[in-house]
Amino acid sequence: MITLGPSTRGLRVWLAAIASAVALVHPTDATAQLSPRSGLWFELGLGPSSTRIACTGCAGVTHGSGPVAYAQVGGALADGVLFGVEAAIQIDETFGRERDAGSVIASNQSLHLILLWFPWRAGFFVKGGVGVAAAEVTLESAAGTSLVSAGVGVGMSAGIGWDFAITRHLAITANAGSWVSAIGDLVLPEVTVDDVIATRYGIMIGLTIR
Image (cartoon, rainbow, N blue to C red; front, side):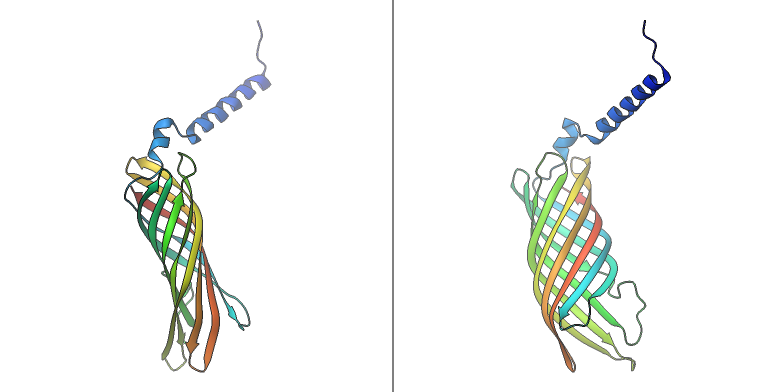
């Protein structure tokens, strides 16, 4: 008869714990069938983001942070391949700073056609999109007046995500992605800001109905 020593018993406990963790993380066949979207689907989400704004001739790059919100609606092209329309907006125009005289307030919106690819039956997906982007810059003067300039350009987006299935028609979706908005020139009094490009990075949590 072989008696297990303390180290052997500890190893068995660790192996059992690892096996249990793998069983929890690895989707069962039933769960895997629930993960990919099919047919008509909707997604709404919100999360923190960081924005980088650059332009030709500018002394430096402007950085800011604030929440971003998005909405998507689409359908299925093929098994594991989806299409849709995405609208995203930077909803904190002051990037978390106090709005006062002499400040610059910028907002950024985009409307993209998107493709989602689910390479496996699990919930992981890759997303890419292209469309239009708009930006608005407001200069707050010491006199209390506001000077506003707006521009429209080309936008692109890319990201990854995971649908965590709750039911057959409902999922919590985690996203990480970026949006690039090539706005072009913004014309302000006494100055023209050339080739404005805003790049936004975000981590979002969404609710998906499918």
